[in-house]
Length: 131
Image (tube, rainbow, N blue to C red):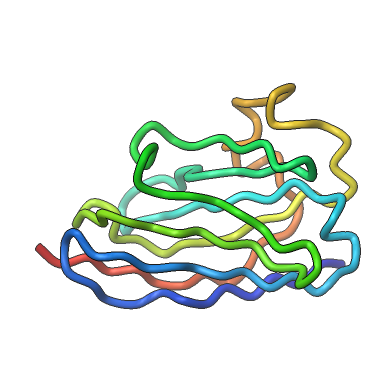
């Protein structure tokens, strides 16, 4: 069992920045693939970014160049730095984990941004961007 706790959400104006954090409970974090997802009311869940145990990353086209996913294995923590935020980035943001991940993002680029590929999910943190 892996517990994930997100933090760092809030309300910002368009063009602003936020950094989300996701603290993982398990020591297996270092072998996990991790992802950030978001869901706005009335919309489907969307994969935002993913990172594997080797540090390879993948981003949704909508956030490329603005968002950066990173991790600190010593702290079992995943981050999402969000810059140049837009009103359409408003959503609940969730982190997700796939423990003992033997795949790399390069091997499964599409799957890494699909919710079904992940096993554990956090409760989410709200991000609201005003124009």
